[in-house]
Length: 418
Image (cartoon, rainbow, N blue to C red; front, side, top):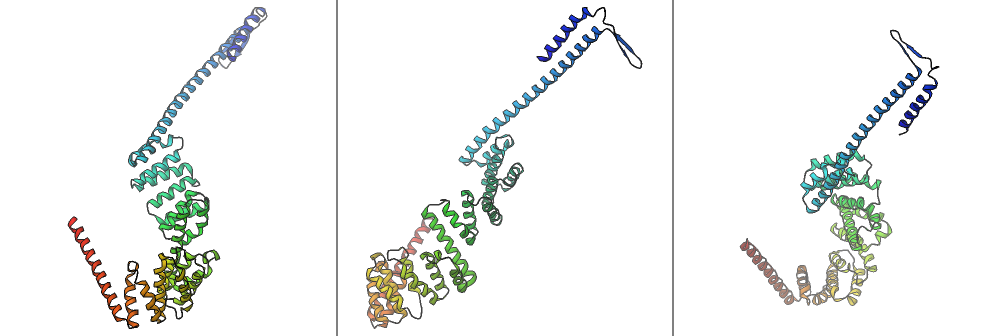
């Protein structure tokens, strides 16, 4: 608009000034090597105005063509984005339905044109992995890496999760170790770390992050306690299997006070020391635990079971403690306490007291263990009560035969059904 107004004003000025200069205008001479052009000043002004108008017209035509091309490109780009968004939503719905093959095609087809192409490639990789196509899953991850780089947290989490699904534990563990350095408080990273460390039996690495897992509220109290016990059992098994009794005791002495006061861990150490035939060390720890454990603790029955296995040289202190417990024991653990006390008396060759305890124990036949009948028969023989010992053996034999008959009938029924 401004250019048109400028040309009109320039032409108007020429028309006004032309008559005035008609007698004084002179002429303009343009001379080249071969040609000479002569014209009046008015003609030069008109020629100049026409030249400017031509230049402006060409510029306007080129600008209009460029705007048209840009609008066309924008229309096609917008159409691709809308189509990609629609296919992405449909693909996510197919993933929820379990149709991973269709979901992969929909999400990955126009991933580059979506609003978040990295997320599209990640979802396509997860869909491909769900249907067992590791090659396609890795290809989508490579494409996502090219767009996002190697410092993208969401991409590294997806890569680690897919490595775990592919059961590539060494690579998955290396990846999750890096993630813990990058984002050690991220809940998804912690959950992946727990899964990978448990699957690879890396109990020490998992023990190092247990405090952070607890603070993250990733698990309920009961779930976290179960996880903690699983880690502690794994650590104890690892020590006793790799370093023996001496290694287990050395590890136990190096633990912080909080763990050394944990009744569950101490009971686990006792059981493994007995398995390793170190009854004296197990006896010392049992005395420590017995003095601090309440009679209503859920660990009482497991503790009585380990006491029944103990064979120290002198168990008099433990006999006093169990005898005291037996006086106030609830009916649910009374049989366990009697069994433990009876076995302790047998270890001391005190068959008189042992027979009294076993008489009370066999009165509750529904709570007897298979070994209790054999041990009670042996005790009664030692005190000269052969009649009771023989009766117990006959009852034990009948019980064993009934169990064998029942098992045979169940096997026959299963074979017939088959």
